[in-house]
Every structure is written in structure tokens, then in C-alpha cells.
Amino acid sequence: DAKTTQPPSMDCAEGRAANLPCNHSTISGNEYVYWYRQIHSQGPQYIIHGLKNNETNEMASLIITEDRKSSTLILPHATLRDTAVYYCIVISNFGNEKLTFGTGTRLTIIP
Amino acid sequence: DAGITQSPRHKVTETGTPVTLRCHQTENHRYMYWYRQDPGHGLRLIHYSYGVKDTDKGEVSDGYSVSRSKTEDFLLTLESATSSQTSVYFCAISEGYRVGYTFGSGTRLTVV
Image 1 (cartoon, rainbow over the protein chains, first blue to last red):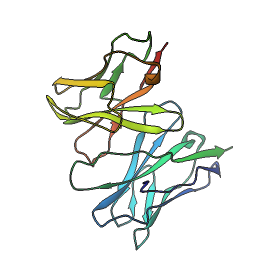
Image 2: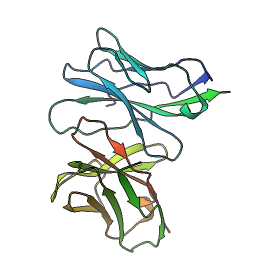
Image 3: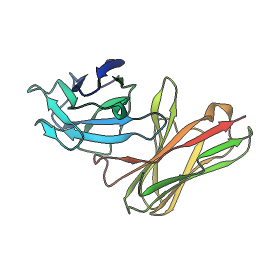
């Protein structure tokens, strides 16, 4: 069973903030939320990850709800180069669990 | 991506022939992975390695074998290629299971 649920597609105007939601209602206390993206035909690219606190880096911000059942990836000023498939992944910080990719959200930035 | 290269980038081969794909890293990362990506299935883990000579199966390992005789190289072999193995293959490296993975640019394999 999928650990995460994402909308299959979204559009966002260039220059606006892109907010990508992810539901992970069965997340357990030792599981992190990771975000990757895949630009057409390229290998996936790591964006950001978090456990329970909000996180920010040079690429994006990650907002995790207090109950940890959902999160939002924010690209603050979307550009055309942000058009990609975005994957939200939940993974434990124990054991040897590997990244498992779902089908993600296809984000299209509109000029 | 810097530090990880896959070869070849493209290959066409005939059914029944053996094929080896190579993943080479210069980051000295312990962990290496092979994924395949097909329309409608996303990325699926084939095999992974957690050190030299230490490998294990992923979710779609049938028909594939791997070897890692040195830290920098992880080879994926299709012993007898089939048309169902036509796919894009991605290699990834990481310092740990839960540390951000770095992916290669992919190998597009077509089995005819």
C-alpha cells in the first residue's frame, strides 16, 4: 500500500509560489518525509527532507503539519525550469528501508 | 550529475543476449542502487549494494544480477535480455539509506 498520496498534476504561474501537497496519514514517529523531483528524462534530484520541523534550503521549503499526517513542498518563486514530476516519499530512519517512488505530481509552470 | 556516471547512455540489443550496464562514482559513497523506470510504474528498485561485495535484491530483481568488486563501480547484468527489460535504468549513490540519493543520468536500453 502506498504510504503517500499526491495529486497527479498541478499548474502554477511563473514567478508565483508553487505549493505541492502530500498526504501521509499513516506515517509513524520514526519516518521522515523526503521530496525529490525528476525533470524530463533526467535522474531524480533530491530537494529536501524533514521529520517534524519545517525545513528550508536553497531550493524549497517543507512544511509538515503538527500531526505529521500531511506536508507541503513550497517552491517560492517558480520558474519554467521547475516543471517536473515531484515525488513525496516517507521512509523510516531505522533499518535498511530504501527509497520507494510513487507516481508523484506533475507540476507544470505556465509562462 | 557530478560524481556519478552511467555507461552506456543508450543501447539497443537483441533478445537473448547478455548486457552489462555500468555505474561509476567518484564520491566514495558506501551505498549504490539500480532502479528501472517504465511508464505507469515510476522508479522501481532492482538491486542495491551496501559495500564491496555486499549486495541485495530490490522489488524487481528477477532476470538481473549485480556485482560490486570495488567501491566505485556497480555493474548491472541482464544475463539474457528480454523485451520486458526495455526500460530506462538509473543508478544512484548515497552515504546512507536515508541520506539524499544522487542519481545518474540514466541508460536507455531497448531490447528488440
